[in-house]
Length: 117
Image (cartoon, rainbow, N blue to C red; front, side, top):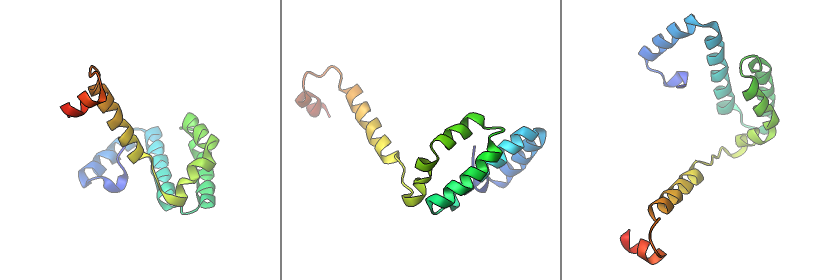
C-alpha cells in the first residue's frame, strides 16, 4: 500500500519480487500508482476529469466496483484538485467529541464531568 517513492531500497527489491510472481498484482499496483500520480499532478477539475476518465478505462478490468464508484462521483472527486482540502481535521474533532461522550457516561451533570477533567 506504500507509495513507490516512499519505499526503501530493500522494500523496492521485495516489491519487484512479489510483482513478478503475479501479473494481476503487478497491473493492480501500476494502476494504483497511476491513480496516485493523477491526484498529485492534476491542478484543475478539467485536467483531473480527463486523466481519471482515461485511468478508469484501464482500471475497470481489475477494479470494477472502485472504478464504478469513482465514475459515479467523478465531478465531486475532481473538485479536490481546486483547493486540496481533506476532512481529516473534522474527523479528528468528531472522534475527540465521541471519546469525551463515552468517558462521560455516568456523570449526572456537565458540571460534574468538568470537575473530573
